[in-house]
Length: 306
Image 1 (cartoon, rainbow, N blue to C red):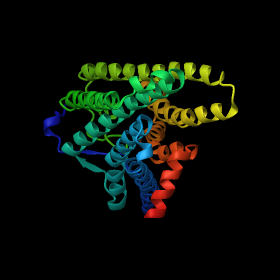
Image 2: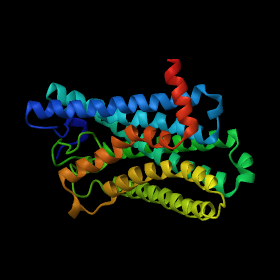
Image 3: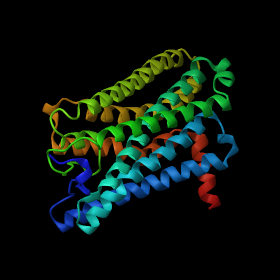
Image 4: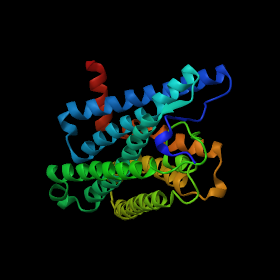
């Protein structure tokens, strides 16, 4: 049995066996990372600088972009460095910090997507009460609750994961440190407490997903009753980008954490991890700006001004 206190490092999943494939992995991740930095950076700057975007919807979008930057910066740079320098090692403290920051970003993003669904529900289904329900103070409280609850959740899961005795070595079969892969290194009964915490977190994520689905059922019921085509188009433009982000992020994330062990395989785990941790931060700015005239106009002004 290996106790966590005797470990000094973990070994992450190697990108490839040949130098050419390692450099290809580095180049692909670098391109995705730069796209995420550029896209989210532009969204944050545009929302902060354009007073017409100082509304609840764009306030939450700014928060989402900040979380996307934090999420992808937690996992991708280390994987790129390992590919570039042909190593797999990550220090014990580095693994713990990566796990905490990733869980924090993941939980906050899930909570924030739920809040954004509520914002769209109020805007479309209860427009006369929008100013009261989505005032600036209420928006700040909801965003703060999403960040704070995710901070506590990440801290609890990290604190419960790393004291667990390990019996299966220190090889993490993923390109970053995540709870399910670390639990696979533990002894047969020592991970039950942390497993219970994962189930609770998964249930909360499932609750967020159900809330979002129910919100959009009511939203689309109202939208389809709008007589003017222009009104329906505007409503769909508000909702479809958010639905695309939710579908990609929550569906792949929940499947990765809740799938039965019989479906688990290194290749499937890797693909799912990329889909819920790497792809969303890069494509979210594209989703939100594609059908949003106000945001596209602000981004165009920002780029021309620069």
